[in-house]
Amino acid sequence: MFCLLLITVVKKLTCFYSFPHAFQIWSEVDFEEMNCPVKFSVWYSLQVIFLSVLAANGELVVNVKNQGGDILHESLFSNITGDTVQLEFLKADGTLVTQFLDFQKGVQIYRLMILYEEEQSVQSVVAQVPYQTVCFVTKLSKQDFIAADAIAKLRQKNPNTIRTAEEDLGKDNSTFDYSIDVHKSNVISTYIRPLCREAAATGAIYAQEADLKFWASLGNPAEAFMVLDAVEHLSGTSGRAVSSSLGRCKDTNSTAARCNCRLDFCVPWYPCGLKFCRGHDVSGKVLSYRCGIKSCRKCLYYQFLTNRKEFCRWDN
Image (cartoon, rainbow, N blue to C red; front, top):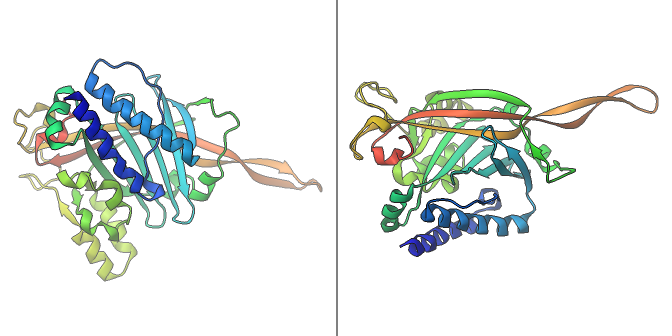
């Protein structure tokens, strides 16, 4: 059974090699023995794939210490032509977190690939899905992340340095009102479909009303209609995306019941701004020049309505 799960994971992940470079998944992580042989097998398989691809592609890898003291390895890649940036890391619990920035469309995508627990993994062998994928699509503020061309120029004097964020931006509590139809998502961003196609199976591509209005305002009336046509409102009996008449998934007994789901995660380190220093030219004139980056940390607390508790397995 465990061998079958391992083979399933490897087969499942080989599809990432066919992605465009900006979507490919690679990271590295120090591994330690885990109590659950299923999770260890899956997790170790991820490392073998990540390390082999990373070695061949020369991305910037940053060693980061999170608040819990774990050392994570974040990979940063920028596509100057497409004006995109991808940050990716593997959490200690095996969750793969991807932050993708589409600067041209003003879109930010968070994708989480969450490994099932031991008993959930055994059940998932039948479905050949050892993890669940969830995506959150939000408005990108260019002031929150340095540009793609700046990312491409980043270098580390000592790649072994362990870094911590200079500024903690606190917690972002957000409620998601809509789900995005992956087949109509190109009008919002052409990157949603390749990144989130697995999340579409459970309708787990989420957006907020305020962001949809912003994207609709960018184009002509026909494009605005297409943006609104690409989404469906998540509503409970009260007509709200998170319904007070429905309980939290962690307090719901039936796996088939609708409930309010919550997913919390943090990005422990990312380049959120540029640093400028002062100097003098040969004539003594004062000059300002770019001399480094500012790093930030933020946590995201996301709430949304799910049609079945089994699509919110982590909320327990």
